[in-house]
Length: 277
Image 1 (cartoon, helix red, strand yellow):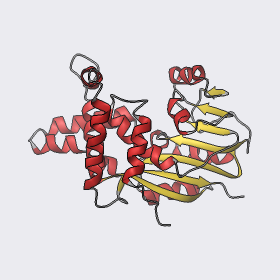
Image 2 (tube, helix red, strand yellow; image 1 turned 45 degrees about the horizontal axis):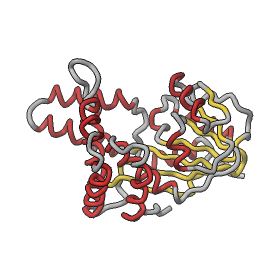
Image 3 (cartoon, one colour; image 1 turned 135 degrees about the vertical axis):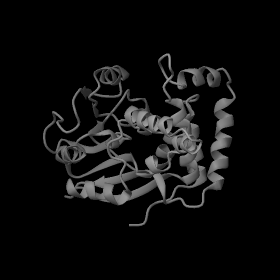
Image 4 (cartoon, helix red, strand yellow; image 1 turned 90 degrees about the vertical axis):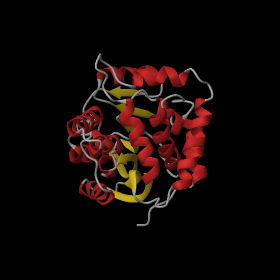
């Protein structure tokens, strides 16, 4: 199945939307811009299951008309924010492979950038399949193996001769994101198939140059400070003090997009996956 390739205009439109939520967190606005653009090609409806729901703000941005949504998040504090958001009819505080809902009780499911963090990915996808009605659709974004292979900051530090520091940076990055499943696209497809789900479409997100900028920014943002916290704690006040930053960073994103040459080899992917009837 040939992937659907996003246009520069679609990604920039996605940035315009998500920068309202994350105006001064450039790695987040950059990544979410691509996801937003990809989800514009999807449709979910009916009773919806949001796996790894978070605080609900991004879900509400993507699917503003969704009216019957149940969230799942294993983090108690995050689940409470989801409940307080008003987005969800209910939020279950549970691991995603043990969802307390009946068989075939959801028309659609959504999992935004959460499946790669799941320890039991086979069990999670099987549980989503169990919860979906026959013909139900899962719309989801994931990271691929390129997130590790194109990790720029540790590579630069290693080239400078600081191998121990480079290894520490990479380990901290993986620990922060709890990255369990950075899989190639074909292996993600196999995971879906093993759970009894069929991939209907695949949209690559963040090709080589966009990925390099994202991973460098994200790694820098989450570098641990010796006194506690992370570099993002220092960067955010600087960026947020300048109201021109969101529009200026859009120009950076646009320039990077102009450099891309291979739009299929990417750090992430957005899938539409269906449970057979």
